[in-house]
Structures are given as structure tokens and as C-alpha cells.
Image 1 (cartoon, rainbow, N blue to C red):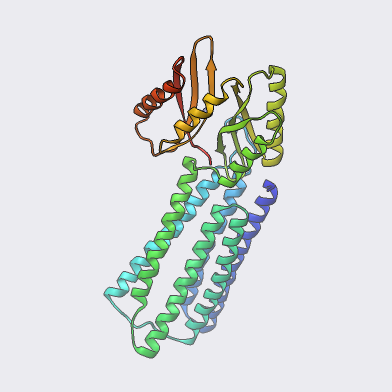
Image 2 (cartoon, rainbow, N blue to C red):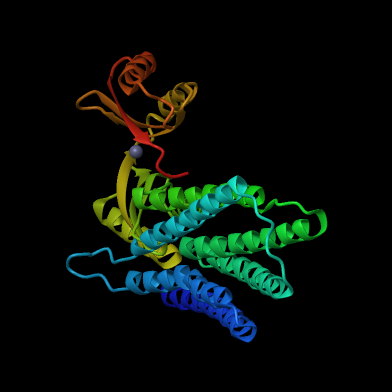
Amino acid sequence: MDPIYRKKKITQTSVVGIAANVFLSAFKAAIGIFSGSVAIILDAVNNLTDALSSVITIIGVKLASKKPDDKHPFGHGRIEYFTTIIISLIVLGAGLSSMIESVKKIIHPELPNFNYTAIIIIVAAVIVKILLGAYVKRQGKKLNSDALIASGTDASFDAILSASTLISVIAAMFFDLSIDGILGAVISVFIIKAGFELLTEGIGNVLGGRADSETTKAIKQTINEMPNVLGSYDLILHNYGPDYAIGSVHIEIDDTISAAEIHKMTRNIQNTILDKFKIFLTVGVYAVDSAHKEDRDKINKTALTHEGVLGTHGIYFDEEEKLLSLDVVIDFSIKNKAEFCKTLQSEIKEICPDYNVVVNFDANYTD
Ligand SMILES: [Zn+2]
């Protein structure tokens, strides 16, 4: 997706969010003035803070789109991760304050003061927030913006909280029951949970999460289909915001290919991946000789019998030094690497007794 288009769309979506909340506030204020209720007017003013997450989203994409500079050569895209964290804290705060209010109501139950004006306001709020929440979340998924998803979640929970007020009013009206405390507390638990999940996701992005599986598989497939490539491994991607990544990959090639040909090949791979995925890859090379194919297959098979081994590559027989080196891709379930290394070494030594065996472990950074 074009970053400029994405930024424009995220900003537009957030402007809709601000407009919807301003509209709701104005509607409440009008009713407040009309009915002469100071409480409703104050509530209308208070409602304006709901536009905050949209304002933060706009500021976030604006700052994130700043061009790279001397101090930040990878750009400013990661600012969007912080935006998401701030909005998730807003959701979390809303959940906590709603929980406190609800507990107060449970301790001191009060039948909600009912009138038609209040119902009109609540119904308007529920409708606006349901539509807004669904729209903003959908746009967030489409535009790969966690900030929008968080902002939309915030609006959806506002709708649910407002709806619960309505249910409480009805319960009070017809059954003389005061349930708004309990209902509010239950909903607050869900809001707090959602806030935590958004926060975890935001922090995960800052830490550097696993790259999107579909993308990494597509990148490897593209490379594997290129001429003279025997396989691609060790793909690593570093994100600097939702729409910028750089990384590296290793390819296996025949050991008779010349440096000039390798130069052309790796350039070709870089350009193809940059064109197709907008990702700059550094390409490293593993040489493969045709003489030891059978041994390589045996070694691969042996390694794969162990739990936690995902594959082998870069198996190279150095005839001068009598050295056999290989990379073994393992998942994060293998804790004692040193011990496992010894086991593998002795098993491989049985297959190729004339060589000293060196095992390197690769983590499975990408799918
Ligand atoms: Zn490797």
C-alpha cells in the first residue's frame, strides 16, 4: 500500500471519528440548553474527550510520516506503535474508571433517574458509537493501523456502556431493579481486558514481533523461483513502522557459480523483492556442491527426527580442512542448545566419519 495514500485514509477515518463525537456533543448540548439541564451540558463537554483517540491517531501518522534524517535514518514509522500504546491506555483508563463507578453503584444502589430526554440522548449515543466503532475498526484492519483498531474498540465499548445504561433504566422502570452497577462492572472487565490486549500488542510491536507469515512465505517463494536459487533461508525482517521493513536472507547456490554471476543474482533478488514487497534485503550466499547430495539428504533426515528441528541448510564439506559445517533451524522449544549440539554432532559424525562437524543453530525468526 502506498504510504501517502495510507496516511491520507487514516487521517480521513480519524476526522470522521472526531466529527461523530463533536456531533454527539453538540446534540447533547442542544438538548441540555433546551431542557435547561446543566448536568447534560457538562456531559456534552465531557463527551468531547472521546474524540481524543482520533486526534492522537492523526498526530501519530503525521509524525510517523516525517522523512528519515541523520539521527533517524530508518524514518519515524515506529511512532505509530506508541500511538497505539497511548490509545490502549485510554481504553484501559476508561475501563478502570467505569469499574470504579460501577462498584460505587453496587455499594450504594440507586434507581436511575429516568426521563425521556435521557433516553433520547442514550439512543443517539448508542447508534453513533456502534456505527463509528465498526467503521473505524474496519478501516484499521484495511489500512494495517493498530491505532485505528484501538480507537474503534474504544468507540464500540462506549456504545456497549451506553446501551447498558438504557437496559438499567428499563429494568428500573418496569421491575424496580437497580442493575446498572453489576452490568457496568461486567462490561468494565471486558473493556479492561481489551485495553490490556491492545497494550500488549502495541508493546509487542515495539519489541519486534514475528513478521507476517503470508508476507515472509511469499518473499521466500519469490526468491526460490528465481534462476539458480536452490533454496532461501534465514529470512529476517526488521520493521520501522507498519509500512517500512528491511532485512536479510540467505540463498543456496551451486558452488561453481562465479562471483560475477553471484553479483548479478543477488542484485536481481534485491530489486525484485524491493519492487514487489517494498522491502530491502541483504542477500548472503551458501555454496552447495553436487558431490555430497546423498550425505546432505541423510544429515537432513537425521536432524529432522529431533523435536524442535525445522530444517537444515548450508551444509558444506570443506575438503581441505576436512570440516563439515551446517545450519540447523530450531524453534524456541529447545532450551539446552549446547547439549543438543553434541547429540547432533555425534549423529552426523556417524554419517560422515571423515569430517569434523560444526553445527550452527538458526532461530526460526520468520515462517
Ligand atoms: Zn542459516
